[in-house]
Image: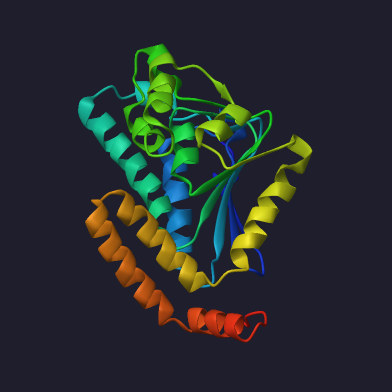
Length: 259
């Protein structure tokens, strides 16, 4: 066992938090301890008002190979599995509930729950040599929980094809299907992530937080309720000083001065 933390955390002067999965020898698989560590790191970000963006990265050749299958086989009981997948679901939902955008920086394979992790991040930038699969079906285990995230990112037929074939798709195919936003050459991956980060941190945090919350709420409701919620959210946003300054700056034809 290594004494190194399972998740490394860094934060720069802009409030950009980088969480790096640090279990390279096990392809960053989501053991219970890894999920605990990532949950704790995400909870710290949730309580960190100056945080602006989270980047989830990984060490080694794989981004994340999904659940730790050896650990799963060590305790074969339904109660254990229900608890394990519930733990994973809570961690995944924490990403969506954070008030700041979360970007997956994918440098290698992302399979099963690792592919789910990419899908649950708000944005994703992948190296051109990254690959993605929900391959549990190849072991007789349909990737049901990853399917929840996939079906909300990809078209239904594209998501279902991945789930029932277990086949890998390339980074470019993942971009075309909507699983990732941008694809970069391996040596340009960090620069592409930085371009996306810089664009986000240039915007007011309050507006982004309100918008992210509304974005996910409205997806899960009917269209009339979605418009009602969106109207209330925009009204609240307009009362924020950053929006008032932005509109005034537009009227005065000058750049906004956001603190």
